[in-house]
Amino acid sequence: MKHILLAAALAVGLTATAEEAKDSVGFGFKDLKVVKTNGVRDQNKSGTCWCFSSNSFLENEILRKGGEPVDLSEMFVVWHTYDDKADKFIRTNGKTNFSQGGASVDVPYVWAKYGMVPEEVYRGLNYGEDNHVHGEVEAAMQAYLNVINRKPNKHLSTAWRKGLQGILNAYFGELPETFQYKGKTYTPQSFAKSLGLNMDDYVSVTSFTHHPFYQPFAIEVADNWLGAQSYNVPMEEMKAIVDNAIENGYSVAWAADVSEKGFNWKEGFAIIPAEKTEADLEGTELARWVALSAADKEKERYDIKGPVKEVTVTQESRQEGFDRQDTTDDHGMVIVGVAEDVKGNRYYKVQNSWTDNQKYGGFLYVSEPYFLAKTLNIYVNKESIPKEIKNKLGMK
Image 1 (cartoon, one colour):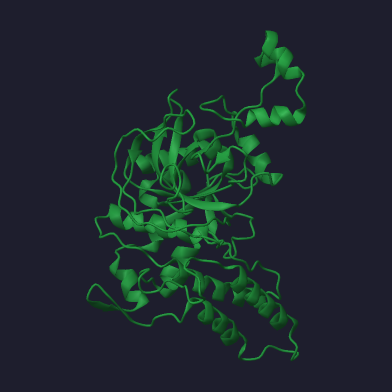
Image 2 (cartoon, helix red, strand yellow; image 1 turned 45 degrees about the vertical axis):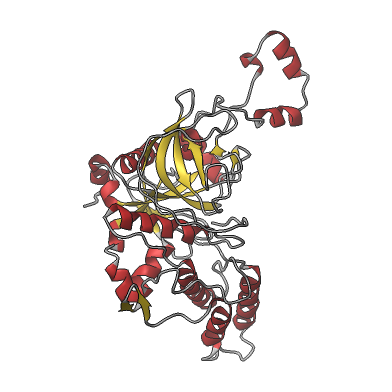
């Protein structure tokens, strides 16, 4: 999952409230329920949304369980995933994906295997930039790995992995073996343990028909380099999991396609407006409509001034979007609440990682049809899954 924008980071605590959001075009969003969450972060020019979103999700989990707010280091996770992805790339003779992208499960993978550190201990900015910019380091590592993969010495040397780690250390800095935080000494492993989370408590859930429901499978996208499994449920049950989570104070890590024209970050909403047809119109409006070019009709469809009729999403249309790759693996965010517009349509309030310099301070409102159509997977605490769905999944 990748996406790139500019600006600065902010860390603020929010509480669960119902309040009016500053108007966006004409939606008049009203928050109905918002869970506790840390503030919006800034991934800047790096394709590491998967890490920012999953870190934010786990920070929210710490808050939910009564822990102190903490800003977790994204680049500690990114260093380890780059390193392990490089190892897999070489072991598979370059047949696996090596890129900035990743998946929500990569953060718990690093947490369980290597631990965690706070942001103030490891920022990963060792290359003359104030904010994350990964174009050069990714290109340097990819060029290096391409040479190693060609095996100029006819077999691999014992030094190639250290060479890759040398690039990581040059850009991000060497990883701490021990560190001081709030008057105590930790290792990454002991710090992770001190945060009170068990990575076995979290699962990925998706909804596609090319695999059986209620059985896990690995979603076939390039950034799922770990081959991580997701539980497969009907889309309405996937939505029910999110609704139950928010109602009970849990946030949800959300992987989705944000390439739709109805995803408007600046104005803070994501919808999929229905196409107009001649059957919807009459009189002069019909005469005007039929005279428009296809391009003008498309432009008018997305000239959104407020709530509009949206597409009806079915399990079949959702699957078709994925099969035809109209729904792609773009971006990771965190669902932190539910809201409604002035017409009573329901939305999810979503925490992004494209800075707080935006109409809603870095949050946006995603319609239920958009969620149903464009979700790749959600990552949740098992406790937040309704009991009847857990039983179908054979989950304890």
